[in-house]
Length: 455
Image (cartoon, rainbow, N blue to C red; front, top):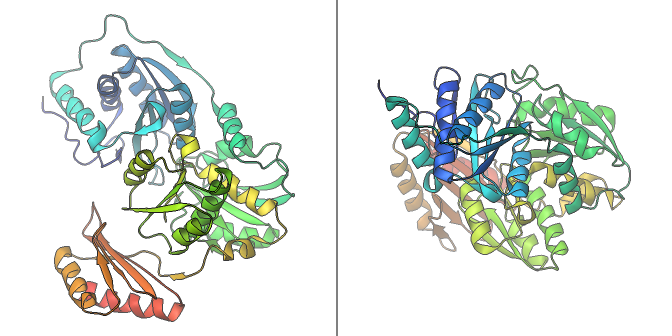
């Protein structure tokens, strides 16, 4: 028989595709066996989200790993950061079955080594793929003389207690918070984490439903936070929180129903983490976060370090530099105290603590961290990406007081504005981000750059 073609589903950092068209239970079993072989672990932990296909895929993966001799702890329904907690706390490799914010017919696997260290193409994923392709053609590998045991364990209460040990929130003033779980795993984790805190929680779409009947569980798309924005204003709430499907990202809405930029949240949390660590430490930010972030980091005694876009680059730099915190424009927040892994829930607790220990509304609190105007990310379909990047470089390279760098695509920086244009890894797209000291300049540079990109 022919080997399975995994080129469409094995991505840079995870496995993701349509079930059962692109992958299914037998392939999940082979992935489990390959994961056990590549990590050479005596024990692993497996969790899954609320998608209809997740329990069966996760169980098959566990069976595949156990057949090769690994003991498997199944933690059942969980958020992705809850799986990272289990990997860190139990010090064993882990696998999370989720397709994050993708539509219902998708599923995937996010894998990590012991201590929540990421598994990507260069750190084991390529070897896992090669084994699955080989075994799909030749038959499953020979089982171990002694198969591993599969046991169950509930980690939700321990996960919540651990997060609450990292942020002081029990003594905050009472706050009313609207939470949109998007029918994803926030509906599972929020009730336990927020239990006992002085919060009046207004739940939206907490029913676990992997068909996403209300809206896509992707708060990065403004269309998916419209319900939350209206509810925050209607309830007279202090803030709103939106989680994505696997609840590893968290987006914040202020009391006026306005989205708070993830850059402002990064700066706010960075300031708090620096205070917690004695006013010194390294903070990671990717190159399309706001100028506000490195400014706030320096003002609070820290050292900002700029990276490429992508969680593997942030996690690598976190590990290399011993950074205490890292943040991305996409609302992924990484903490040294959380095994360098990303957790939207811990970022949300920081926002609640910051808001609840002072009298101002959230809009006033975050204003000090949101100092510039940005375009947001604008995608353009471009076949010849290198030619358009060269045209941009030629156009801006001639200007005085301008610096260019190529850390990730092309970044043009002047005293009053910056722009970055970078190519998508997976589609014929160029992605533009612009930030300036005022809205008029942002609009001018945005339109100028888009004219060159789309010429």
